[in-house]
Amino acid sequence: MQTYHALSVGDRWHVFRLLAQGEAPSDPRMAAAAIELAESYRGHGRAYATLSRWLPFVTVVVFGAIAIPAAVNGDMAMAVVVVLLILGSVGHLILNPALRPKNVARSLEASKRVVASGR
Image (cartoon, rainbow, N blue to C red; front, side, top):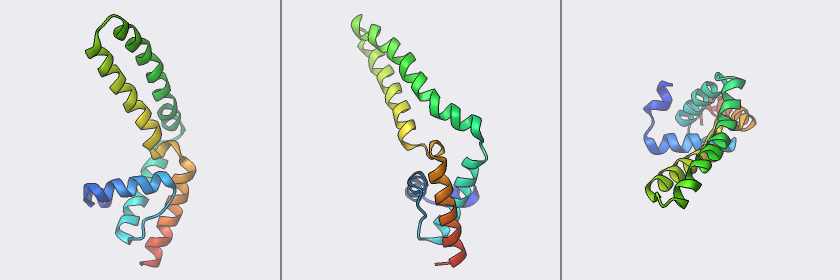
């Protein structure tokens, strides 16, 4: 993933977002980074995808069960920390491209076409 890590943080975020949406960047250098990232996601396998998909739901249930009694007992610091953890889990569900394998495959193919055309 040398090409991906050579990008600036903003470009990495852009490639990451395009991968989640199933699109390809128009820049061949960023398309090559998208290919690297997509192939790394495809290499994780089904177990990783299943765990990535269900772990945030389990986290929300478990931490929700912790946050409610903490809030009722007046421990607001604990409730705030747990709510932040829950928001992180929801963000994981929304942003993680590994949870959308069809979009990753579509982005991979489109990125390969961009690199091949050399635009």
